[in-house]
Amino acid sequence: MSAENIVESIINRASVFKNRSVLDRSYVPDSLPHRERHLALLAELFKPIITSPGSVSTVALLIGDIGVGKTVTAHVFGRELVKVAEKKGIKLRYVHVNCHNARTLYSIVQSIATALGLNIPFRGLSPREMMLIVLNHMKRYDLHTIVTLDEFNYFIQVAGNDAVYFLVRIYDEYPEAEKRLHYILITRSLEVLGSLDPATESYITKHIIKFEPYKAAELFDILKQRRDLAFYENTVSDEVLEYVAELEGYDKGGKGNARAAIEMLLRAGVIADYEGSQYVKIEHVRKAVGEIREELLVDISDNLQFLQLHELMILKAIIRKLKSSGESYVKIGDAEEEYRYLCERYNTKPRRHTQVYEYIRNLKNMGIINTKISGKGFRGRTTLISVPVPLEPLEKRVDELIDKKLIERD
Image (cartoon, helix red, strand yellow):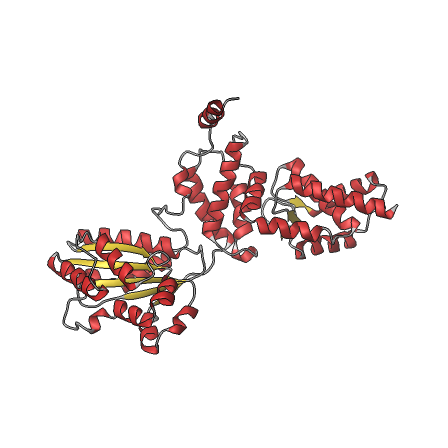
């Protein structure tokens, strides 16, 4: 097949996606599941911009680990407050600056000026001179501005205390001026603020909004929102979303990172398209995990060599049941039944249930499998088992080790 035919066949192939951009990191949704309280807190803090514009300069500090919604919450809040201000006849601008890219005082002030549409020759001007131009521009055109400094820790580390103090306490030098400039500062922890002097640190930490990692149920709601916008109907089941959510959910041992969960769903969809599948399946998610978390594959592969023969056999049984069912979890009873079949096939006496349960607990402790207790949809309570990585290469490696153990035994 020619290169042209290869490319054309892929382009013309049906896709599970109707709008992939919804899964992009830069996408800002209309609503934020499980971040309503954070939006409300921001609205309360920045309320004076609307009720008594110019009376006070507000600084809010958003704290939380990666992927917990800090950046998207700031974007959504800025967008919505601009709308509210417009209805009230107040000209409000929202400016978002990433300090990973703009790490110096000069580059941040320049970014603010550019976002506000100032066409000034920046070369030769000091940050202070540029900031005065910005403040005068805002006064002249009756503007108010919220500036979000994302990944603020980079700015602190590079620019230092004096630069931070200058930005957030600019009105200390002009106490009679109308307070038109406000800040939302975003960082992962308070630790980096320890390099600031006490006065600057206390000023910045006056209004802290903490973002906790997402739980699995919360991630499911976020993924469902994105699924409904990004994929064609009935191409991604709730079971797939639940599987992704439980892999990443903080209460299930994950990091609670919504960004990672959305990335996992995107990769699974891309893999489904590449394989020509009409649906995103659980195995597509496992393959996505294998691509994103290569270190997990390496760790599991390394740990396999330390397993006993019967631990390898129960793992193979789990893999076989997952492959045949196509589901995300297998019941411990079904896995044990398959294990006994394998023992017969390998002419090996099966271990008792209590020992099998110990094997499964050991596999979980080594990070090779995940387990949970059954909930809705199951009669009684039973242990459900899943494997977080692609099944085919894992089974191949398990088979190699089983064969090696059997040869050593004989």
